[in-house]
Amino acid sequence: MKIATFNVNNVNRRLPNLLAWLKRAKPDIVCLQELKAADEDFPAADLRRAGYPAVWQGQKTWNGVAILGRRSEPVLTRKGLPGDRSDVQSRYIEAAVKGLVVGCLYAPNGNPQPGPKFDYKLDWLRRLQRHAKSLLKSGAPVVLAGDYNVVPSDFDIYSMRSWKDDALVQPAPRAAFGKLLAQGWTDSLRTLHPDEPMYTFWDYKRHRWERNAGLRLDHLLLSPDLAPRLVRGGVDREERGRDSPSDHAPAWIELK
Image (tube, rainbow, N blue to C red; front, side, top):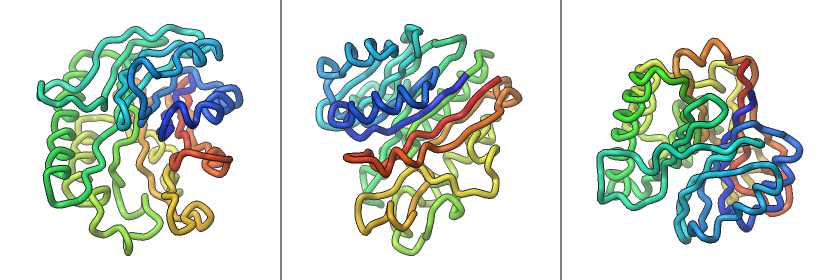
């Protein structure tokens, strides 16, 4: 079973790229982030024709998350993280698909920091920790996949020099990511590739793609019962080099 996460950075603008990648890569489950489309504008019919029924939570202009199942209808189980009824940002969706519980997430960026956006990021990550713990207690096989907007360590970024003040690399978000792993979740790409950076994001500015000046922001975390089934994984880097690309590339794993 192949599971992928892809921040598409505007699902309608990148729809030709997305459909072509789905045809090439044939993932069984896909988590999409940064749809930048209201619910009614999500291209559900196009994706279904391509063999990928979906559940989604859109938001006009910003945010938005979706879960696709290859020739399999995802069953929606949750929209939004619990713990803050005032939070209207579309950043989390959860579904049962192909025998797994899949949480698709788009964590807040948090810039500029310090400030209210950074405070919101930390609060959102705390709520994610609480919900992740409850998912572990459920005993279900779970994948938490998406754009965490956290660079876990200096090894996950080409250089800290121009990013040292950025919210993505601050100690508090890194600690929050570490607390997830301490619960028992497996960082699948890092487990499979301990000696490779495995970048998933290259900023559009300053020729960062051409210089391979990347960051690892997109992660697939596995519950303890799924970790022994992990066999392969990677990043489809070539997608970042295509015409009109997202600034992210798809990250994926395979489970036996």
